[in-house]
Length: 99
Image (cartoon, rainbow, N blue to C red; front, side, top):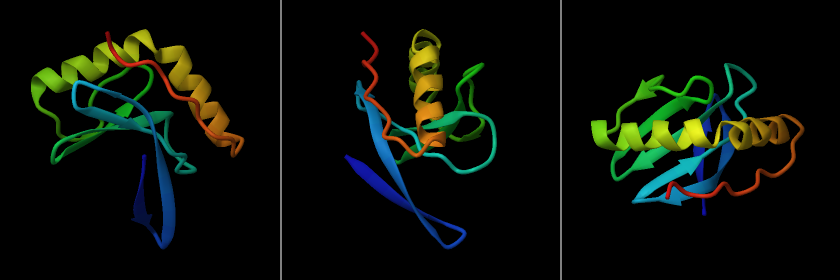
């Protein structure tokens, strides 16, 4: 599943890289900023840096944010690898969900 965002006149494609407990994790390369991903939960959206994971922008319920941070901590290398692939304009592989 992919969603599209409009940003400064660009149409960015955000591939879904993981999904667990109703949380959707997406990543796309914005040409700036530290490596990060986006977490969506219902109407809530957040931008999360990969290392160290934490809330950079947006909002998630506290419990959901804790789960996303736990997942990102476990999957840090896979997330960084995905970011590098995006920088090279290659598709990002799916990352296992939180178990």
